[in-house]
Structure formats: structure tokens, C-alpha cells
Amino acid sequence: MPELPEVETVRRDLERELADGRMVAVWTSGKPLRLARPIDVAALRAACVGARVEKIRRRAKYLLVDLDSGFSVLVHLGMSGSLRWDAHAAPRPRHTHVAWRVTQKRRADGEVRFVDPRRFGLVTVVDRAHEDRVKELKILGVDPLEPPLDGPGLAERIAGSRRSIKEVLLDQTRVAGLGNIYACEALFQAKIDPRRSAGQLAARRLEVLAAAIVSVLQRGIANRGTTLRDYVDPAGLAGTNQTTLRVYGREGGSCPRADGGRIRRIAVQGRATFFCPSCQR
DNA sequence: ACGCCCACCTGGAGGC
DNA sequence: TGCCTCCAGGTGGGCG
Image (tube, rainbow, N blue to C red):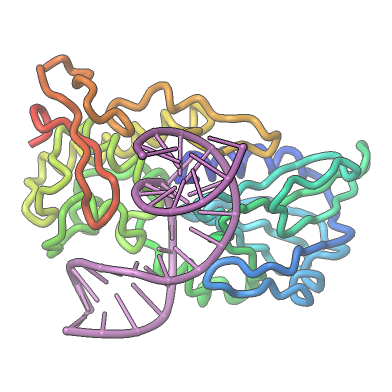
């Protein structure tokens, strides 16, 4: 589900809601998350209980909730995860796996809920003094928005790759934040065939692609994310970016460029890939 | 080191 | 109605 724009939407909303918040209790479901690993409840409680939320940062598709205990909670939403913010007394949604009760000076108690039906997500504690050692973070490639990716920046990350450009865009160790939807959309906008060998793309084409990546991600954020199945923001509301998608999920449809092409669906590295064979070369 | 396959999990959609 | 198969926005382990 969530790619960079969805995660950034969650970051902004949650940071606003949690301003001045203090965590007073942590509950977990006991079910394992990513790699069938159980959540370390003791570490989570030690880091969170009594701690004030300072800010929330995003690194690619990861969120870091910075606490004044010196620790951060590292969260990844996987395929089906969401972070909700609700009244403390409101019933927890099905598939809630972590809940943080939060007190604030000027409002009633609230609760942050990590909800993840498929349990591909991640919730773990990070010591900020050693954040650079966190393996999930240290393998990440360049963030395409901070600062906005350009042609040379993209070329540097692609250098030497003999894989297809679509595979490289999904490789978080190169460019970190794109997922299947935005990769397809960026390649359409840049008129590049997803099967093209990444290392053989000319500098001018990479410049166009870098601009397309920035553009589709910024539009995604402006539209508060893409909701195809179950992505929702902390208030439980869907995004609207799905109405702007030009190829993703539109197989058989005619190309929005009205060039006579029909959107095709193929598999690239086992993932559904949508493109127009007429204008994407 | 790199590239590829697949498992991890639940639920929704479509076919029969 | 029910049962079965396939598919999904991500990631990392393990293989050759």
C-alpha cells in the first residue's frame, strides 16, 4: 500500500495531532510483524512511557517518531499498514497491533494505533545516538524529494546497473520511496519503456525521468496519497490521487496521450507493470 | 556482489 | 450461498 506520498501524508497529519503529546501507555497485540518477528514490548515501553513526542521524521517509506527519551519509534507500514489517531475510548480497529495512549494539555486523551492486517509492517525502537547503525535505514538510497532528484543524481544511483529501469526504481537501496504505482506513473510521464536497461538510458532521458519522479510524488502528496484498496490517513480517510493515475491499473484502456496506444500489463520481476507501448520507448 | 525467486499474511474479487 | 484461486501499494532471506 503505502509509498512515499502516503507515508509523508501520515507524517504530517500525525505530527500535527501529536504536538505536545506525552505517551502514557503502550499496548501490543502479541502478534508478530515483519519476518514473523515479535514486537519487543519491554523496549517499546521503556522508550515510550512517560516520553514526550518531539517530532516525526520520514526516511523513504519509514517514519521515525522522535521522543524526548532519546529514542525513536521506527515504523514501516508494509503493504497494508496504517497509523490512526483516535479518541482513547474509541474501539480499536480490527488488526490493531500496537496502541500508544497519549495525553495532551488542551485535549482529551487520544490513542495512536498501528493497524496492519497483513503484518508485513515494522514497529521497533531505535536509539537516536546510534541511528546510523540501524540496518533498515543505512541501506536506503537517495530520497527523491529532499532535495528534489535531478538527472545527475539519478544517473549516479543507476550507474552500472544492467537491470530494467523499473526494477531499479523499486530498489530502495538506489532511490528510496518509490513503489509500484508511482514507478509506473513516473515512467509513463517520462515516456520510458519500463523494460529498458537502466544503465543504457541517456543522460537527457534520466533528467526527464528524475523530473517525472519528483512530479508524481509531489502530486501524490498534494492529493493526500493513492487509495486503491485500504490506504487511509490517521483520521481514517482515503486519499484522492487514484483519480490522477494514468496507467496503473488501467490495462486495456486507451493511452491518455491519445496516441492510439492501449495500456498493457506485463510482469517485471514478478510485479504488475502498466505502460503504453506506443509512447513509452 | 549481484540478480532473481519466493515467502511472509489477510482479505477482497471473480469464477464456478 | 459457498468454495476455490488469484491478486495486492513491500521487504528481506537465500539461492545460484
